[in-house]
Image (tube, rainbow, N blue to C red):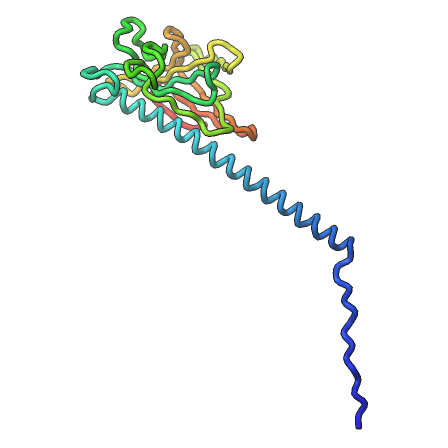
Length: 212
């Protein structure tokens, strides 16, 4: 009769402490890289959405301003500027859709001057709607180029820190103003995220609107 040998399994001690430490460190690094990539992607995507929305609002103002329809605020008026106003000193996290007040006479040039009060409280005012930017996004800079080709940029700490872009029939040309008398050839609106990523919208007097 053959001797039967008993099988003895090898001694399995599991992971050593150094091996566990290395494994946990690798998992932690991979998790951190994945989280950063996700946040970076989310920030980039949201910034694209913000600037696209502003571009669409500018184009909507252009469409309303040149259309042969009644002004959205003033009945039986067909040639009143409709535009978008940025005021980074007043609030860098919002902008306004406006229509110029036809009772202003010489001031009816397409520049938002707040006549009529707040658009939410006074239905007779120039402001049609206040658009708030998503959290962690702001209008960081406004740049304007004059007809001599000189570009000046300004932020919440400089003057003038406002910009109105408006349109009025019969053409698609933009009225770009820093004040009621300071007319520009083109303008740039820069949007910045909390992660310091930025995108710039360009508006030209010839009616072009695009993301730089």
